[in-house]
View 1 (spheres, rainbow, N blue to C red):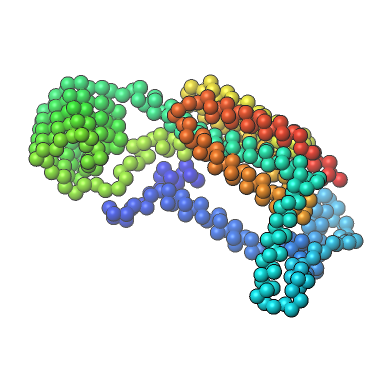
View 2 (spheres, rainbow, N blue to C red):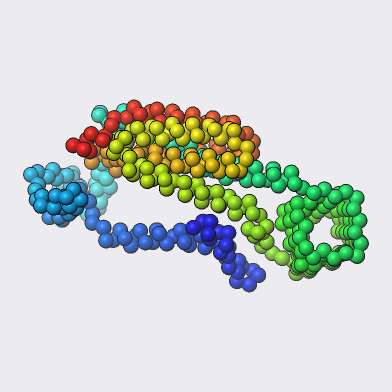
Length: 430
C-alpha cells in the first residue's frame, strides 16, 4: 500500500493547504487498527481469565470449543471433552478481603492496586527463577540481536541505495562555463546542470523548471521569470538586476550570497513544490521497501511448512546465521540491483527466524508466566530496534564496513545462542 499511495495520492484544498499523500497513508494504516478493535469484541476471553473472575461455566465452554475444534482438525470429531481437574487461581478480591476484613471501599482499592503491582512484580521475577531463568536470558539475547540487526538494516538499506543513486546522478552532471544567452525563452526543464560565470541578458523563463541546477557567479540582467519551480536548485554568488519574478518558488533560501538589485517578486509559491516526478529516488525508496516486504512471503511459507519437520531451534538458529552471512556479502555490493537483491535475500531469511522465535518463546514458558515472559522479550526487541535505528542511521553515508560487520556479528551470535535453547517440539507432540 505504501508504494501505491504515497507516490500517487495527494489532494489540495486551494493553494494554502495540501493534503499530502503521507496523510492519506496514515489514514489507511489506521483502518486495520479500527477493524481489529471491532473484531476483538467478537472473540471469547481466555479460560484463565474466566476462572480468575469466578465464571467457571464460561471457562468450561471455551475449553470445550477449543477441544472440539482441534479434534475435528485431527479427524476425530467423536472424541468427547472431559475435564478431570481444573486448578482455580485465587481471585484478587479474595486476596484483598484477606488483608482488609472491614472491606472499606478506599482501602480496598488501595489494597487492590498494591496486590496488582505486587502480582506483576512477582510474575516478572518468576521468569528469572528455576527452571526458566536460563531460558529467559537466552531468549532476551536472541530477541535483542535479531531486532538490532533487522531494524538497524531496515534503516540503513534504503539510505545506502539512495546514496548510490545520488552518486550516479552526480556523475552525469553537465557543466557550462562562461556561457552567454540573450533574448532567449526557456520554456523547458533544465536538469542536473552547473552554470559558472554565465550571463543571461533579456531572457525569459516561463512555465519551466530548474531541477538540480546550480548557478555560480552568474548574472541575470533584465530577465523575466513566470511560473517557475526550482527543485534542488541554488543561485550562488549571483547578481540579479532589473528582473521580475511572478509565481515562482525562488526565495532568499535559494539565493545564497546573491545580490538582488532593482528586482521584484510577486505572488511567490508557498509550501513544498517537490513531487515524485521531481525526485524519483524518493519513490524508489518506497519501491525498494515494497520489494523487501514482498520477499518475506516465501520465508513465511517455508517456515509454516517446515517448522515442525526441521524443528524450531534449527530454523531459528539456521535462519539467523544465514541472515548474518547474507548481510556480510553486502560488503561487495556496488550497484543498486545487487543491494536490492541482497535486501530481499536478507528479509526472506530473517522472517523465518522471527516466526520460529515467536513459537519458541511461547512454548518455553508455563502458562502462569507466559505473557510476562513474552512481554519482557518484546521489550528487549523494542529497545534493540531503537538502538539499531540510532546507530545504523548515524552511519549512513559515512562507512559501509561498520554496519555490515556489526549486523553480521550480532545475527550470527544470536543464532548460535538460539541453538542452545531447549527444543520444545517434543513437548508439543506429546
